[in-house]
Picture 1: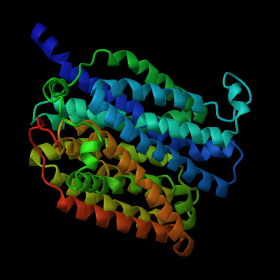
Picture 2: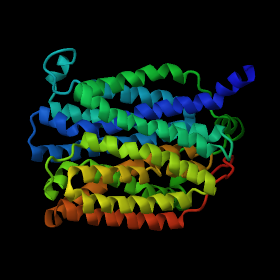
Picture 3: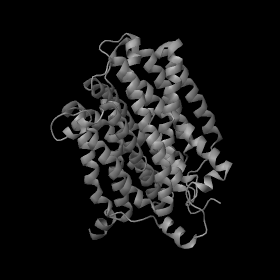
Picture 4: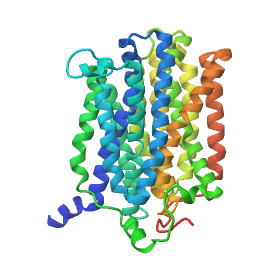
Length: 423
């Protein structure tokens, strides 16, 4: 009994639990904006057309913040340790999301926010929240990957991903019950509450060894920028994951615009679609992780799920015009196959040395998320002559073609030794 208890509360298991719960809060806060943006902007007095334009602008601000944060937290993780990022990032995004509950408020506890222009404050807070959100997943995956066994790290990271995506479903359900302001406030409170658990997490042994034995090793972003090989490797990983955020930013995030052009009535609500998408993603995340372990490969399951995502996107566009129910059902399938996300992040952590691993693993998910910026800009440009549906076909086709090419050019990292440096 005592041995079982010691194993259950081992440093590795505690790290997995804390990383998983942190990613839960991270995904809740990250997805919450996609869930509430239409309702929140309507409540702030914007027209349908203004909601579309402002919604894309706010999303891009959040994603740009995540891009900035990805670099900052990644470098910090390689210079100061993985654990430091777990503390700093959650404080920043929790405070930002809590304040987001008060945007445009003129009474109550958040009445002080009424002194600021609502849309400007919304934009600033989405950017700040994005910076904070950027550090959570990368630091957690880096830490867990480095303290887990070669054969077990895929399972450990899969647990993080599976628990994390439940946060997205929770965001959709909570918004339905308490509204967008309280949803933001709840996200902020959950993040602050999670801080206490973080004190039980130990630093990565590989990082500690690097500090004591590799004092002359360059760490962080500089070794990557000095090597075209590393830059191209990172670029390929990001492009492989780009279709995931194409599905979220376009087919889910802009669903009212696309469904409106299809002639659907009632138009599917983004909050409902987010919940449906991540309901599929919960099972897809587990399936992709287990398939990776079963096949002893990262590339093969990514390829299978990438192809499935492309088919599911086509189903949304082909079956969606029949009814909102068909649009929703196809979204569940799309969510399932888009859940190769955690395998991509694991691949990033395995393909780079200890001196740059936190930087790469933290930057990768945020660069993938930030890829939605050029995708949505491209979508907006081609939507003028092609319409929303035509723009979705074209922008999606480009994303999937580039991802397939990038995956083909990546090396297979399954089961590799993580104890090495990049020079």
